[in-house]
Amino acid sequence: AHVVPSLVKVQMRSKAAASSHQHQLVQLRRAKAAHAEVMGAISDLVSTGEMTMEEAEEERRSALAALNEAKRAANIHLEGEAQGDPFETPFGGAEGPGRQRAGAVPGFNRDQRNAPAPVTRKRR
Image (cartoon, rainbow, N blue to C red; front, side, top):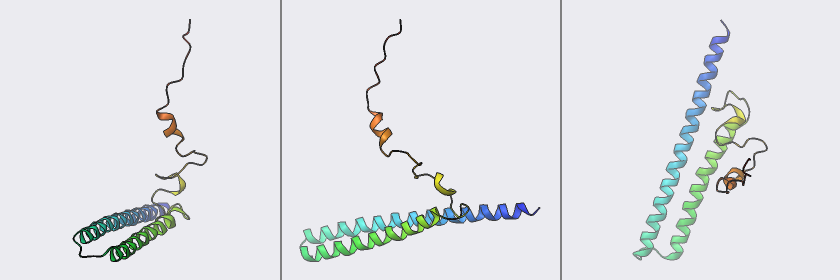
């Protein structure tokens, strides 16, 4: 009778972790969208002559800094979930989506995909 409540607690905890993970990804997506919008606005202002190239450069730099800050925040958050207690992570440790299996060679399968089929001898 003691096992069940702790199991429920674990499930709730992993749900909470998953939802905060989702939230972090949403925040990052919003930051990227905002960044794209700002960059577009800067380009428009330069093209209409309302902003000098120097001002535009400065604005772009600060927009990029803001985007990088958002990325860093998301990364810290996502990595914080990746280590430690397997119950704290929505995907339970290293075997989650977007993780490399140990010894997997990145891009290896991709290189093989378009390779010609191996030549096989006709069996007689």
